[in-house]
Image (cartoon, rainbow, N blue to C red):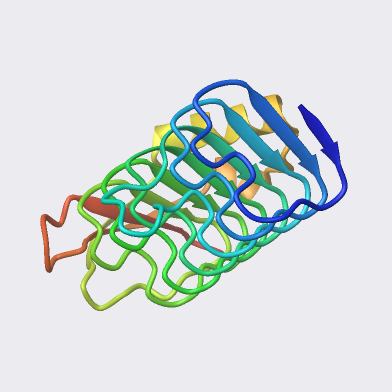
Length: 190
């Protein structure tokens, strides 16, 4: 399905398969509780992108959400599985209480990202303030990030800078208040 123009709340909520392409902005709760398929927004998204429904233990559990613009607060909150990509900045509390899955942010990742996460990955390409509950692990060039970014370029036409493809990332492990198996990968800019 292709939608020309902006849409309101909950586009793609609980989607299990198929494809929705919004050629405009999406309101709050886009992809909420999504289980499969692909949601593409060629604009900005509101709060709680791919997050859990009120009272639910988990958010998105499968599929892909690609937003070329920015996303509001709580993007990928309680993400269980799947891939969420934000081409711009995210609001506060991105990937809060993430259980697993991957959040890729091309712009700036706002404060308190990954707080309370158990597993999963945040790939911060445009800068991030590392929470105090994450510990530095190492600097390396993760092969899977290169593969992931190449996939995003080929499948969705996202503009991926060579510095990200060949870049070195600082790896931080956390949230240490819990399992501590999550990671934040911060692209080093030279």
